[in-house]
Every structure is written in C-alpha cells, then in structure tokens.
Image: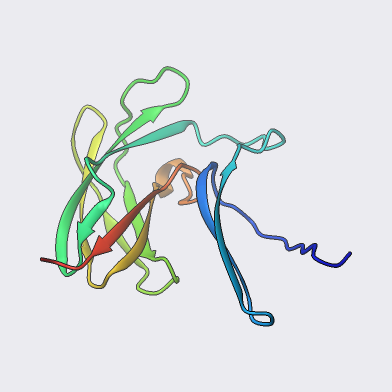
Length: 149
C-alpha cells in the first residue's frame, strides 16, 4: 500500500543498530535505532563469546589504537586460548578491509593494533580458522573515528 516500504537485509549478529532510511523523491531522510535478537532457529553455535574492552567508542582518525577483547568458552565462561585469533575490520561503507592477527596477552585477553586512517565508523570482527570461528559468528564492535584536535 502507499507509504509502506519493504526490503530484505541480512544482519550478521544480534545487537543494537542505527538505521538510515533515505528516499530521493520526495527527498527524505530518517534515522532510527533497531534491536536485533539472535535467530532462535540457528542450530550451529560458535562455542565462544567475545567481550570488547574499550573505554570509549570514539578514536582519533589518523592514529593507531590497540583494541583488546576477551574470548571465552560459551559453555563455562572460562577464558579461551586460541592460537590463530585474528580481527577483520573495515570502514562503515565497506572500504579498507583488513585482517590483522591478534596477540594473546593472557587469561583469554587478546590485543590487536588497528589503524583508523579517516573519520567515520569502523566495524571490528573476531575470528579463528582453527576453531571454525567465522568473523560473523560473534558480536562485533563499532568504533567511530573523529577528527584529531
């Protein structure tokens, strides 16, 4: 019916998202938040949980920043020691995709140094091939690079 719009997207992981709806004619832009819940029909679980240790979601564009996260076994919540943890990250528009190895610093804590060359949103995903842990299996982190000052 008039005024009702429908589209289909695939959301990689649960969480809160900021969505923008834009229309050319008539010119219209509206932003809103949406919460996505886990798919109850998904039968394959990664067996891991990730928690990012960040004080703020803002970083300075043009500077490298260490990002730490904790990887835990989902069943018992104990720290997970995985030999090949890596991070995929890219800008919000999909440009600048890079994969960086993460370094284990102990007790399930991993650290990776990431570059944020320009202002904008960056998405950070954790994976580990040896454990069949795909980048889309765990919650991700979004950081916003702001101008230096």
